[in-house]
Image 1 (tube, each protein chain N blue to C red):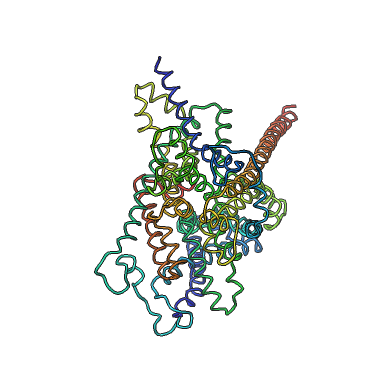
Image 2 (cartoon, rainbow over the protein chains, first blue to last red):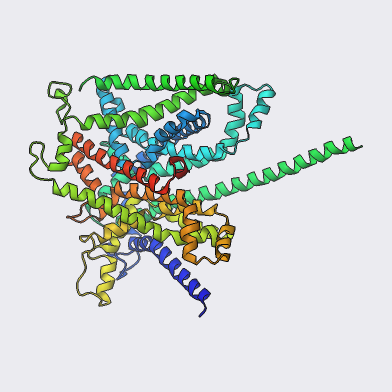
Length: 295
Length: 338
């Protein structure tokens, strides 16, 4: 065997191990969801059943948790995307001296453990509620939204920043020369340019919110979300119903993630073709200008 | 509570906005291009107001103030609501003292359980970080430098799919695998490898492999992004000059990928050390992990002040780790979070 074959064999072995490790546990869990056995197991496979899925529908806590998770997800998108956008725009404009401090402050939530963000959010708003003498801000859904948005806004900001770096400032100047106001530039030039980033940020924000547990478990107070209900169930004991729930959640999240990937690629391709068309048009214009001059 | 906090809420935002405004004025006066448009000038009034309000709310009300509050809170004793702000609401170190000595009065005995859990969490998290790097590096390198376009696209899809699977569900999957009557034990016993089931959960095998599994892809993506932009000619050049493969990786590829390695390591360490789901689901009765202890301070001991002190210990550890990584890899924060 040549050295090259050995290398290929080793690489192949590594690939099998890696993806076996990555997918193995999920496949096992999926199999236990359709096994009739009372305890989640693969072997012996006693028979195929979908009963574990129907058990889920009778669970009121679960339905309420899912409803809250979706609600919080929507609130988080509505809050994080504008905050992230503002954060990114300020980042590109703030003076050099202030930039590193500003960057430290707004990126720190990404590097802070989720439990700490949850804890500090609850402590802060409990005191605010005490002070203004109203319990309305000390509300699980409100606090979970705020707590999650603290770091999800930073994700959104990073997405916007990478898009803004490719913004061609001459577009803004052209619009201003043509008499547009700054506000019009923002709504008619910048926002359309940022559209793909807004879409990405919204999807990432929703998914991150939906699957978050660490921050939510503190911030949600007495309410429940899908993940907190799930955590309670998992700790109580293992039944195949949880496997079934897991399979359902994974299928739904994956459908979302795949749809997002597909849409993103379509948008990317459209943009590339638009750029190509623009380049062609530009070239035509240059040659068009050249011809009369030459004549 | 003392009115220091009320003052904080009002004073800090005002002071910060003032500081930034003064800094902006100062920079404008001292920059060569004094004709450069002002902040309001480049954005227009409505957008400028939106930007300042949004960033102010986020950075101050959501990020900075809650953290400061938590710090302040951790230096107060636990009191019923009626006594807050009363004469007994003084600054104290007793919450931190409890972490070290297991008592708010005596300092005779060390709080062995909590301190061991703390160190174990840090050491194991570091170990898992290194392990994740070793597992991910070959694939990241393959995708970034060796594989063809269509291969990489397929691999990426295979990686993105499990990325969004919830942390709790990953832990649950490992629970099924490693339980006493779990899949692995059943198979091993049936195959005659072992006589009786092994207590994987009690031995923390399940927890450590579950944590490794949970944050594998958090390491993968930054690593891949960093390696992807490396010019393949550099590797070819090193090879032509006769460098053995491990030299190429150690002296060419890894130094280039430093920001990606640093960011992957920081994220994995932070997520591991702050993991709550995996230890709750995969931890045995004797398992020591720091985050569940913090959780119990809140929801078993109902001592929020003490919980805050514990949370701050965890936060400081993470900050120290980030600083250490930045020092060792000589990268800045902005390079790392790119």
